[in-house]
Image (tube, helix red, strand yellow):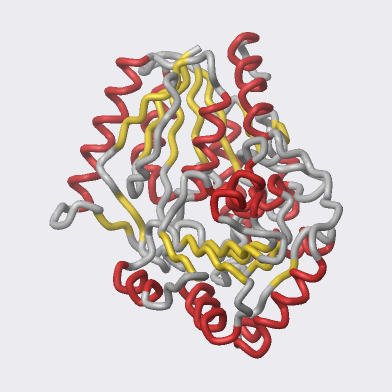
Length: 388
């Protein structure tokens, strides 16, 4: 089976890394990963080939597209991307087209996706099955009725299935999409998509760092980093001023944190305070940690569940997605939420102390095998033909 997976991330890395876990699970098949956001340089499995479209991203207000190559005109980049995506389809003739998020999101990229979807259905492009790959929670819309009508119309006309990467026991799609009953394309809950810590990761990392039983390792992270400074800045300041000598803070800012902001944070570095942009061994760090302090994005929350790490999370406040997920997980005892007021040193350090004293607890049991289940479902869809 040949799979073409389209993923366009515009602000953080969550969409890309969730997609990456799914393409990893499609081992035994040939996968072409088409990406078009800020480049993420990590090794890919042998069965995966990445094709990077000329970069487009959105500003932090999600109000406008801009070309990632300085000086390039957005419309010029759009026309080039349309041409490249069309050529890929004609050349590769995929059996399955997996589209991350669209039509639930990425409306700004319909200029290149709609021609492909129309081409497949009208027979102008080689036939293949089309599936939407969707996370658990949708952001709120200004006109929900018009939005949901547009989404269901596109799904029902052009898609053969919808893979919802969630466990409905925790989050159901109709929590944030009231027109679920109007979708005629088959809907499959796959479970949450996440990687798992490698065996023995906790012991390995702690031994490498020389962390004894009296030390406490705290790992702080901010996903891609573009919106992480409001959490990381007060955290490192509070740690520098008030943390006991047996605490160790490892900070991963994310690769997209502004360069000047990164340099400012690095000024707080010390023997027990290490600040880096990124680690390709992040799950091992989480497994080794006595506490995680982070944003509350999809990937981070699922990583926390997979690593069974006690956690304080600071949800991104621009939309409901992170706060809704965090509240559901907090209700089950999987983590605790930080608000703006909790980032004051006088409040933050006591919260950390309480979490460290609380230690590891029994974790909620949710389905974290979403990548593998998505791969199996996609295989069955293509093998059976027709709608699944």
